[in-house]
Amino acid sequence: MEGWQMKKSKWLLLAVLGITLFGAGCQNKSQDTSKSGTSSEKSSKRRSSEKKTSSSEDKSAQSSESSTSSSSSKATADQSSSKASDSSQAPVTTSRLSQLNQQLSRLLVGEKLPQRVPVSAGKVLNISQTGNSRNYTVAYFASAQSVALNDASLAQQTAFATVQKKTYASASAAQQTINYQPTQAGLPTVDLGTGITATQEGAAGSSYTNWIEGRWSLAVRASNINGEDGVPLAKKAVQWLHTAMLPVPDVHGAVNLYVSSASTSRMNTVTWSKGSAVYLISASDPMVALQLATSLK
Image (tube, rainbow, N blue to C red; front, side, top):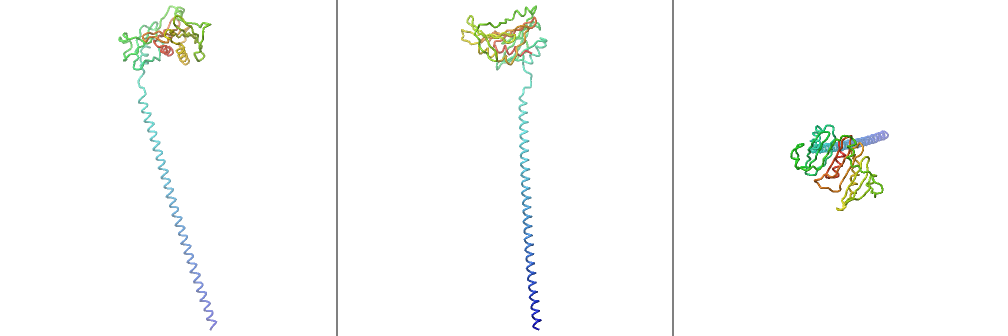
């Protein structure tokens, strides 16, 4: 009997121990499940947060691209506006000289005309013409207002420059009218720049600076009485002719410039011959004479 009770006690003890172990296992499993759920929940929250961050970054990038695109569009619009503004300020009419040259070309067929005729600020260029293609004079005026070619009112004004042509009986007769001055040896020299050396001499209260360029002789006259120096003007002329070309004469041509001359006179001259014709450009300003002569076309 006692043996049976002992066996029964052992079975009860084993049952209690089993129940206890089973309960502990279930509790551990529940904790693991809870932890797993918590971890899963945390992972889900983290992924959600990352998605939100990524979405926020994407929106920020899109916003930045939109802003950049907007700025680029605005810059393009500004540039287009600026170009349109510049275009509206561009000249839309043919220059006064071109208009008058077109009319002269119909009167002096085949003749070359100056493409550069400077006029004082506030003045307007006007032109008169007499003669034909063999013998003519084209006069240039700086007027207060523009008038038609050969307008009668120009007869009351003084031209600041003229272009003339005269045809002679022969080429030799034409060449004899050119005041070509060859260089003289033994005179003092002066460097005018760009490889040009001039000679200097004085006579009758004036001093002359002379040099040769190609078929041309050039001279600058200065008044000793007025204390003038011809070298600065000679250097200015040489610098101009370093980039601009005078007409090519058949034999010789001559340029005579003055340091000072009255505005009503045309003492500065450029003369050359072509066949039996002699061309003469005269102007009150020495550099204007050179500009007309080097822009013939």
